[in-house]
Image (cartoon, rainbow, N blue to C red; front, side, top):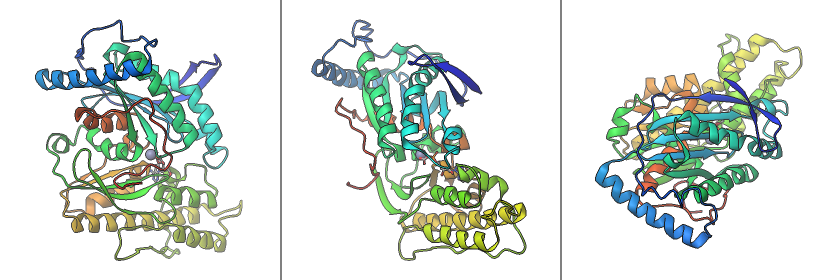
Length: 410
Ligand code: KG4
Ligand code: ZN
């Protein structure tokens, strides 16, 4: 769906909206209905923080006693999607609004950070408002505001974090800074079909995050405890897809285009795989160089490229990336005695990757539906839930951290 929205600068902004999730939940107010503090932006910071801390305690007690629904508004602006979502109890999506900038960046062949920040500023208010309206809720029904604080583009993260701080202060509800990578892993808990995972997750689980900026293997010890065991030493898997697509003249983002075109060509040999044995690390920059050489030899960097050869080379690229990701993840899951595998991040939308994980794994594999693999606000709300339930929240000194890590001290 496409929507023209009026923004704070009163010029219409075109945003592509994807709405996911069904069902309307009966929501109940779990806090004292002190409407005088909700919406009162005039409170100064210290009393407000104390108020919020007390509210968290009060809220946790009430939640345990009455099992009320907890609605978290999740905000995501780390890269090129302005997204907001309301999630009930960490698993049920009430709304999921995503304003994609992909079309705008496509014209530049990749993400332009300054343009991304500006577009986030234009889209953030309407997207958040749409998420609350779409959930059939009103502001007092929001129990906490979660936001990606890193990793990502600094100027893009700042927009979401400041919007979240303003909302938290004016609504008088907790603010929770979320690691974007934890969000990608927690997206699996939003898929209705994974009821086993939702009801009785058997930790430890092996998590693999494959996105435009990250390729990381993470042991998930509990809902809030993570251990980083391997990462890419150069390009991320999504970056390899994007850069190789660009070499072959395809628009940004390249991953979906490569997977759409990929078709075996009998004349093409397979591309190399970088195993980096004895480690759980990855490397994809050699593959990119190999593809560049092959593309030049085949004349695929020229305007008059042979589309069948482009499809064939796309196929070989996809096979190489998928082979390495699946083989190394299964090996790591065995080495760390894991009971299941969670796959998250934009590249997890890739059909061949999904198919091979399911075909080759003897452990249960949980890969969320494609709309929840790419960046969204629901995964941020889902990730915040268990932190909130264990009494954690962020202060108004929450800062963005473009290189925030998951499972490892900085
Ligand atoms: O997680 P994400 O939406 O944003 C980041 O946090 O980076 O991931 C975006 C990445 C891009 O590199 C894009 O090319 C890749 O995910 N991607 C895909 C597919 N859909 C998105 N890669 C391969 N196959 C796909 N179907
Ligand atoms: Zn992401």
